[in-house]
Length: 456
Image 1 (cartoon, rainbow, N blue to C red):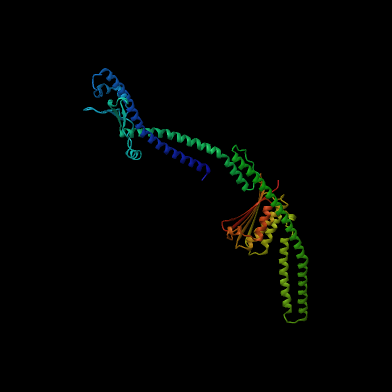
Image 2: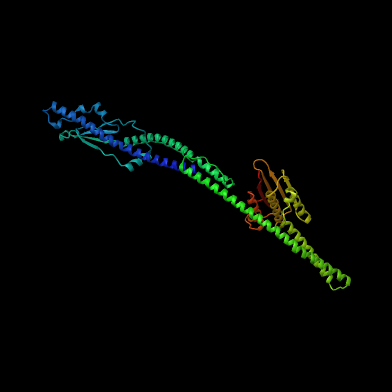
């Protein structure tokens, strides 16, 4: 999962948690706001009745104080204005047929769902009535009792929650959108860093990154640049060492070829001469003791050894590209395999592009790759048809592509992991030339492809 999506998902989770917390807080605050409204209503009515009490006491001083209140004057529209919606107020001690004076509760808030009406009182509890004395200095003046309406409190809480949720949802959506854009903008340089790492994986180590404003990303970009420089230096050093190793190995091959030609070639020629002499002498004496037959067998074995020695010398001596050029040497290579036996598989040679000006290490490497791949396909598979394609890709990516494909089956993964001398040698040569080698399954066998960059 992408980092931007992970951060946005976590942000949305935090927003959802905050929205839930805001909803719970709004529910609690709205439900308990009726308690504050009840206390405020009791206080306001008590203060109004206190003024009325002292007014009646001054005008009717001859009456007993316990008969001063309640009086009809307190149940007025002005008193109703002092009572909050959903709250009922009564005077105690109440006279006969005295009813509470209630604030308007019809149409107060929205009708809550049943689950809300049952959950809120369960967790937040019920409301308590509020008692306030009419006059703290005259206990006989009576008290004011304010009682909240539970249904009105739940309706008010539900309406308040809906209003808060609407605003909270809009704010949450805006915060999530703006924060997501900010996160995406902040992580945008990460894509450039990943692209640079991908180019480095393809061998383009010198990759310039833009300057990042973030200190952390700037440090990562600097580290990626340094890593690319060190990888390029290490690759160049490894290529130089590999080229030197190949030169030394080629010198050893040429020295070995000379030794084989001078020592084994001369000795085999001498053995062949001795065998021919023995066979001739035995034939002149007309003896039937099997000596002539043994000498003839020695001659045949010597001829076979000399043919094998010539093949070995062809592989050990300087490659043909240095003498004939790449195109001619490849044609000669395929013709030599075709001429060895008519029972061998069919070898198709496909040359594409201009190969005339390809020389030096690139030509040698291409020839060695083709030679080794053909040898492996002919010796280690039951192929009926082998295709050798050599193509020069012109343009900015001036490179030589050698592809050998057969229909002899085989496990591409096992061959790719093989540590044989042949594959190891062509891997080293291709790496020294700065190219790449791939071994993949073909339609009916294996496909070995090498890409060798050509110097401008």
